[in-house]
Image (cartoon, rainbow over all chains, first blue to last red; front, top):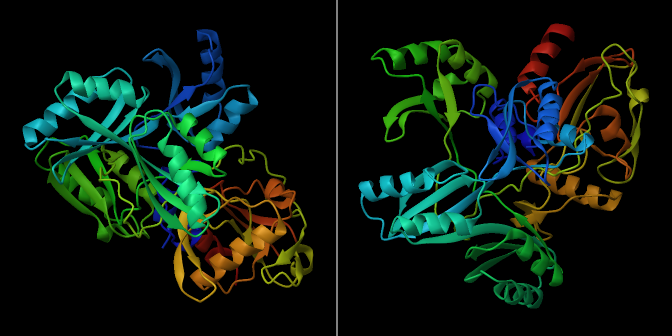
Length: 374
Length: 107
C-alpha cells in the first residue's frame, strides 16, 4: 500500500512513495515523455483528434502523435498513466504503454561489447531506451521498445549477439502443487517458449518464461490451465536513480546540489559521475520527488529516471508490482471543496460494524484516506 | 481509511499466514465484501494499522463519488463539508501537503 511506505515499482506509485516517509497515473514533469501505442488502425486525423483530447488534460505539457516502426503512437510529456488511458478510452481510443523487455546476452565480456550491443539495439526502429548491465557470463538488457522480441533478437543477431528473452509473470490461481505442475506443462507447450521456471506463492506462482513468446498466447495458455497471467515488474530497488541532463560545466554539480538543497529529504541525495554520465541517487523515501524535479528544472537540469537492468530471478524475496489496473480510473469527483461530503455507511475492518461519515462530522474533522493493499 | 479497488491487482506482496508467519503471495483484485475484508485485514495486520478502516461497497459507490482510485486524500470539516481535497493519486497523493494543511487549519 503506497500510503504506508510499501515499495512500489511503477513510476507513478514510486513517485507517491517518494513523497512520503512513501501507476496508476503519473506526473512526469521534468522526465522524458512516455510513449503509448494506439490500438487499431487510426488515421492521421484520428491521431490528431486524440492528441487534442490529451492536450486538454490538466498537467499534460506536450503531446506528439506519430508513427514508429509502422505503429501509431502518441508521445506525452506531463501527467500520464491511467488518467490518459481513461480519457482516451472515453473518446473511443485504446492506449497501451510500450513494453519493457528483458534479455540475457551470453559472451558479452568487455565494456566495448556492452557498448556495441547497446548501440545495435538503440538504432533499431521503435526502440526508445536500452539499459545494459554486466551479469554472470554476459550481460542483461532492459529494452523499452515498440517492436516485439523477435525483431529485437534479429537486430542483435545482425550485430553478432545472441540474446535470450526472459519475461517475468505472476500466475493467479490455485497454489496446489498438481495445479502448478499442470500450468508449467501447459505454458511449456506454447510456441516460442524455451523454458519455464516456477516458484509457488500463496495464491499462485511467480514465473520466468524464457523464449520470444507473445504475451497474448501465453495468457491464453495459462487461462486453459485455470490461471490468470499478468506481467510483473522487477524487484523493487532501494533507491531511485536519475540521469542528470544539462550538465557539462565544471560548476554544474555544485550548482545542482545547491538548487535541490532545500527540498525536504534532500540530505540523502548523492550525485556521482558514472558511465551513464552524471547520476543522482535518492535514498530517502521521505523526499518529495515532484519538488526535486521542479527544483532541478528551475536550475536548468532535467532528471531522467534510470532503470536498473538486473538478471531476472525467482529467488528474490522482494515484493513486485504488476501494472496499474486498467478501466478503474474515475475522472470526475462528486466531492467538491466547500460542498457537503458525499455520505456513506461502510463495513468496518472487523466485518462486524459500520461507520457512517455524517455521524462523525460535527465532532471533529475527518481525514479520509482512500487506498488499497497494492 | 477506506479500502477501495486494488491499484495493481495480482502484485506479489507479503501476506500473513494463519500460523502467524508471513510469505509472498498474490494480492488479487476485489469485488465483494468478503474479498475486501480479507485484503484489508491482511494489510492491517502486516502493517500494524491502528486507524479506523472500512471497505467500499461492492458497487464501488464511494470510490466513484470521491474519484478515489488508486489513492486519494480528503478532509471533511466539522460542518460536514469538504475542507481539503487532494489531487488524484498516486502523483497527487501528498501526505506532506495534507500534514501542512492540517497544521495550518486544525487546532
